[in-house]
Length: 101
Ligand code: FES
Image (tube, rainbow, N blue to C red; front, side):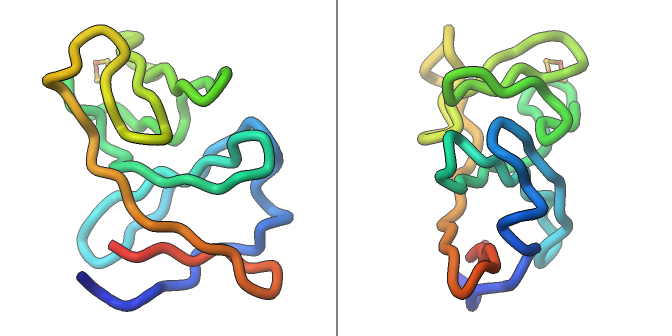
């Protein structure tokens, strides 16, 4: 596991939104879920859609390409528990969001 990497100012990710980052060769989808920052693999397990661009409702993101839905807290697909996006540790320090990939 790598060191913490700074992504963005927390204030630049409004509640209910997501942003995509390339970190250590991975695509990270960072979300602000009701003020809590959480991150999952940003490449949808279906066909590679950009999950950070999906709609976020009640801690669930809907892939913008074909509608697969994932729980942000644990990366699990909402209908098929065998499908799971990798999750990443996130922390906020001094107003900035950090991720560990
Ligand atoms: S690529 Fe995400 S649902 Fe198809």
